[in-house]
Amino acid sequence: MSGLAGFFAVWRGAVPRRLARAARHAMVRPLLSPARPPETAVERAILDTLATQGPLSPRALVSHVACALYRLEVAHGGALADIGLFGENLFAPEVARALESGRGTLWDIEPGS
Image 1 (cartoon, rainbow, N blue to C red):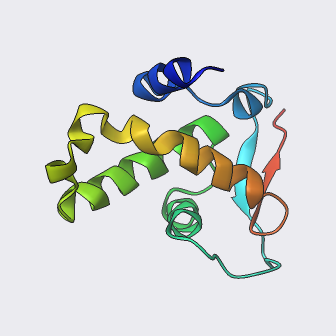
Image 2: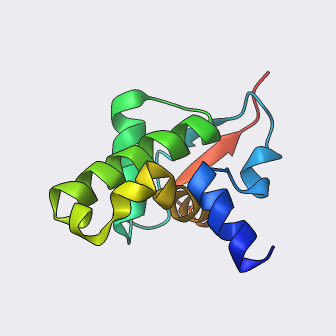
Image 3: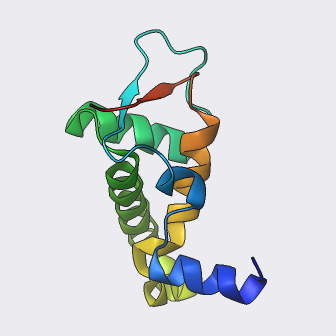
């Protein structure tokens, strides 16, 4: 994917292909005994969202967490950096990467029925 295509994918809020290929009814659930504590703000936001919302589909989880990170960034002056132009979709690729990297250590993505 070219840089320009990547830019427009983020701008539109496209979910990365890895998550789009996941089963439509898959659910993300936190592990009862995680292998490690969350190391980043994104990992903490994912776990906080799962704790308050319960199990979610990967797509819904990415959307919820990206929205929460966007609101947090705007509250801390992110509007001055023109992140409002992109909205919450700016954070979706980062959340999707964290979701994949924490799979099996902090949460699991279980196929649905």
